[in-house]
Length: 284
Image 1: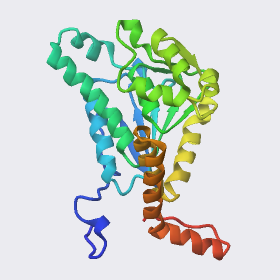
Image 2 (image 1 turned 60 degrees about the vertical axis):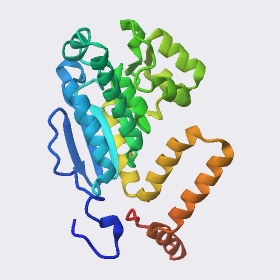
Image 3 (image 1 turned 90 degrees about the vertical axis):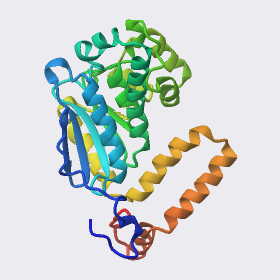
Image 4 (image 1 turned 180 degrees about the vertical axis):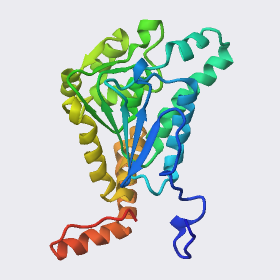
């Protein structure tokens, strides 16, 4: 982007474009402000590898600077979302690593979740079929989750002799579905069906499988054409306020809302209301 004097948001380094990004370990397409990220190993239920973990982490970090991506949809190719870490490409090699190597891996996977929570774009997970292990954490780290009745979500770490505290699960899952329900899923590693996931609040809505991706993309499109600067502020405050008391949260929101009141989108909304028109937001 060409630098325009008087527009510091356009300073070199502050903005980037990802529409031409060529992903190596998954599919990535941008259309009308919505990025669709497709985990693309359907023959093995879309498992993650060391390389795909790292590329996902770096991509979500770069989304912080993406001017052409306003919302993200994550979906799995075929009839499944993600089966977790690839047994042959990840689980096997992990059994041969020393402690520094194991810690480097677990920190990398955690950094992916941190990057998803830190990027300003709303992230919508479209979940069909198997959503297990690290795949369940990709869904959990998203902001919105659409699912199907036939989906099966499992935080199955205890099934392989590990703790349920992987990639932030013990912090995130109780906040989404409650402490007791999260405890049951993390201790047992059992699958949670689609209807149960919606009833427990893990899914925002259930879709028929054939329409799920379209429904998620339409929802993302609506967000992408809304006040995107304000959406980013909402996401940041929901993340930051987990570690605040009520008084600190109210003050933080006062500051955040005052910042949003200084945006052009706020003024556009007012003038559109006066003119009895629908506001056209531009994210500034």
